[in-house]
Picture (tube, rainbow, N blue to C red):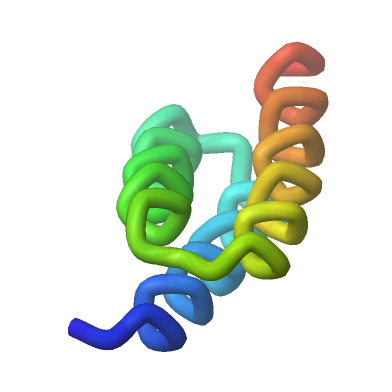
Length: 62
């Protein structure tokens, strides 16, 4: 799977998790972020960190 595909999937799953409070959805998003981060460019890593922060804030409010 390509770097951009993993990055796009991570963004997609985080968006879903932010709109759905199910613990499963949050876990899927976290896993997608982890996979994407390991295979991303520096610029993508910065964006992924922002997505991680959004997801963390959402998880903390559950």
